[in-house]
Length: 475
Ligand code: ATP
Ligand code: MG
Ligand code: MG
Ligand code: MG
Image (cartoon, rainbow, N blue to C red; front, side):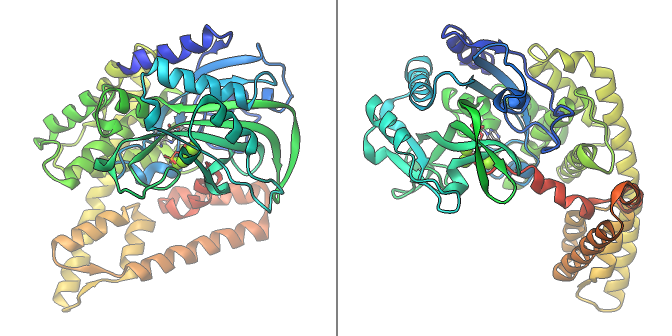
């Protein structure tokens, strides 16, 4: 089943059960939602409905939402299931059906729509949490038992896994997740769903959205009991196409091939090559979609997320020997694989290509001057008989020249030199403390302006680590 077919099967399944189909919202959340930088789940555009601030167009909704998860960026290429940009399929009930209804739909579609063997499906439920004043989710356990899932395949998990909230405040609730047991080829006998293993692949999260999270762990009931579900299209594609990882599915194969062609290196030839090919495939999709939704590279907020994505991709390309100027080549293949469903990629093609070209040229200049500096530093270290590069010098390269620390490490290692990583980290931390202190002392718009200027001159990464955490999802 192709990714397009999966998307279609999901949406028509719910349409035929009285759900109204909504188009994907933008990756840039609406003005009224300052809690996240980018849309991380299908529920974001629907928040006003859950909170009772706006009337939904129907009490049952379904969508395929473009999502971007900055906190997952480091996982890309290291797990079989994490992407930064992905599509999330969802069905939503606005005060209509609740736990039992959502569980029955998920079960029916998993078995009859996607043909899963019921014996391979495991589910998790919320075990309760004292701090939140909630007990185990017996209602969910009963609903799973009723539908025929044996008790031993219903696993109770803590708040960190099975209580969903999008950002520090907003609608939230306990959840129940569906996992597919991929067998011992992917893990160990005693693995369980809800952990970090690759044996149990989480594919669908059913959120029983019934509370509003207020600061400091207090929950107030929402106007109605709602359902919010999220199923990862790319993970489902991996399962249904019989492959191990999302990178081996139809949406990704042409991008991986392009990387092989441009680099002359075959997928599977080494772990580093695989990681680079996957990061490139993921990041170039992400940057294309972000720009198509109006994000431009900059040194703050979502513009910085985009810039970071582009720079990481450029570094990975360089690492496997791809000649400069390659980002637009990728963007073209992103359009070929995704443009039929996402018209904005075609409409914004020129804008996407323009930003990719500009950023690549600018960053390559940064890399070149950084490389020259690094060569000097390395030569000096070697001449003085030092074993490595000092923290001060690595920090200056990063802070003043925007030269990625990863690359400093790698290039130093190529010449048999180490880098004072600990020292570098403490300089980064000092800089964070300075930024926070000045923000706290001065407050207000003026500080935002100062931080902006600082970021623009400093290459910025350290200033923005705070935003990463505002985007965490806890489920
Ligand atoms: P994981 O534990 O694997 O990181 P999650 O619990 O963070 O996933 P949810 O927040 O529950 O994910 O999101 C709902 C669904 O979206 C998941 O069940 C999964 O199918 C999909 N999904 C989540 N994160 C990603 C990602 N980074 N890449 C691809 N699909 C994802
Ligand atoms: Mg989850
Ligand atoms: Mg999870
Ligand atoms: Mg996650």
